[in-house]
Length: 573
Image 1 (cartoon, one colour):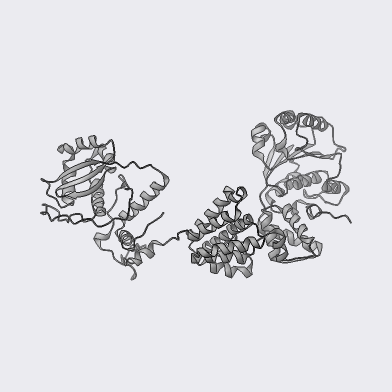
Image 2: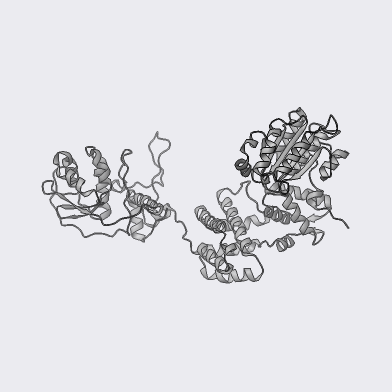
């Protein structure tokens, strides 16, 4: 008994039946109705989204005996022959993959010179896989595409338009281009419901959603998968679909993510063993894991988002799992999985089990993100103050905590941003310097720690306007310690001679040295500066730059700095 595939049996007969390509169907239908059909079209897009079908619908509409509003009837003899892909005098389909040479293009050009079979009909040439044509073949067709005979239409369909641009760029300017999109899962599911209804087959929504997801935006692929599932029986059930397509059950993903939230490293190995022993494909599991993490991320960001592709009965379980993670943690997990999948490690490796175990272990041991607010509260600093948005009464909410003036970060000048200092380790308290006599002027206390010394250095550097061109060199200097009346500075290689000349010239550096001595609680007359050339040669990398930004944030927020020191934390951007 002859069986016609569902993808052919349920091919659209009108533009309104074209799934997910309304921007294409509406434009072409209006062009047919208004008599503004172009002489050449280029249909681009992924496989199975309706490019060849749209080309046939165009040919049907142009040659239909009873077309209305630009729509073919789909029932006349002409429409039936074109829809079925049968031989027709006026509609010719060519596979460019097997007819790609200059001789084939020359033959096509000669055939196009003949008039249609009837004065009211059009000759339509549909060239599929057009990117396979050679450069010489395109050059042969170039002239006829520019000045085609009357009532002759060319439609080129391709999945790789960039190859046409590289091979025959002048062709693009002679065609109207339409880009076909991947069809959303919801529209594919709706189309599958129509097909199973016509076939008289019962189907579960979960099964149709699984098929639509696996089709990856292609309606033809979805119909082919449905045809494959229907070969098992007259009912489409989710268990049968998952078994046939090798899809992993949602419960397994939730089980693994539970281990991630509990940081249970020991659970990874038995989980992978059970997964592979049950016959599941490792690559399919990784693909499904990325989809699950995406779903959790959407639930955390917007639980009512239209991008959610999840069954109503599974929504509560996924919402509970999403609540265990922060958004940024889900994003980091998703990035790790997608990067692993993009590298194709499972496809190239002969040890799929080991590769999968390594990936899952990385996800389990990945550090979680701690909110800055939680760090401050753990250190006893309380929540940060909120700004008064009203600005009229000046009153603060009762829950706001007033920070001590000394705990507030010093104001920063926009014209001279502070230069971050590479962080070596957690700052430790340094030995307390011996008491010194108070300088005349502002009443200050000597620097007790290396962090306070760096803060004073930055404040004086930003507050002194007479430095001129030396400010850039001084930003690269790192204060080390105060040895009696001597401030020790670590200077990058190559800058020591210039800075010594500048600091020894009291006319240029006197104001800067005096302000620095006052802020350090030193006697301005006895205060001196010693330069030591740094032996560190750090490379400027993305990691160093990120760490410098983190160090700068710590230096500007005393409360956060105290939290880092008390809790022995390592901050990451």
